[in-house]
Length: 269
Image (cartoon, rainbow, N blue to C red; front, side, top):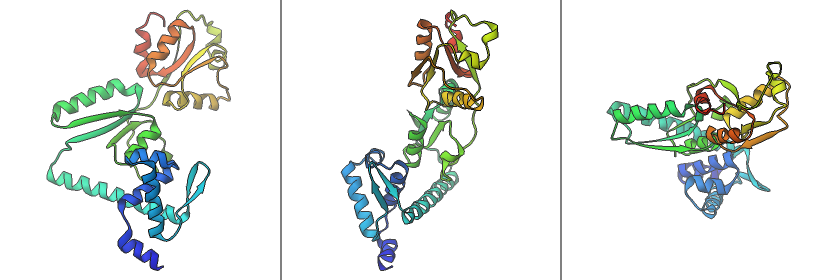
């Protein structure tokens, strides 16, 4: 108990709690080193120092990952609550001062909203020309990690309630509506235009981690259907690579209704 008292009275550091939190999320010293702008050896040394000061092991070392022990999870939960309170305190003080942020970092993984987001960013910039805006793209998991690490102020992406872990706040921006598009030369009889029959044709889809693909896969599962057997899978959120492939290879794809103009603009669809 003496070690525990000493840890909380004089040895505890907010940065160390952040390292514990990121290690619990990513299970990787290398990934945490990247997020904290540290070397892997420095993160490993920090973890050893934290455990020495704490007086107990906080992670169980397994092949390829670190598994947090129960006491470590309690420390992480406290860190997340303190961090949320500090963010709220910062917002309240900034509001009282009437201050505006001098820099805003935004993470984006929402290709169907890019046109709308561009207009919103331009309007904001015109209203606050002194504010520097930094935009970073990435997949959902990376953006949420950057958000938790304080490297982003805002992340715009498709997220589920379970992704938030009670430490992030979210608002609903957009409902995804999907449409099926096909190459113009792909002759599909009216009798074959249900989803089950369409799966027999060639398809060109984004990777499974893309929001559009995830919606499509969810619909397949709900109908008891399997993936197309003839499939080209593109690891990109941009519709233009898929569009170019479909111009040269007659196939079917699925896209957000917001992106349909990109396909309609081609004489191949």
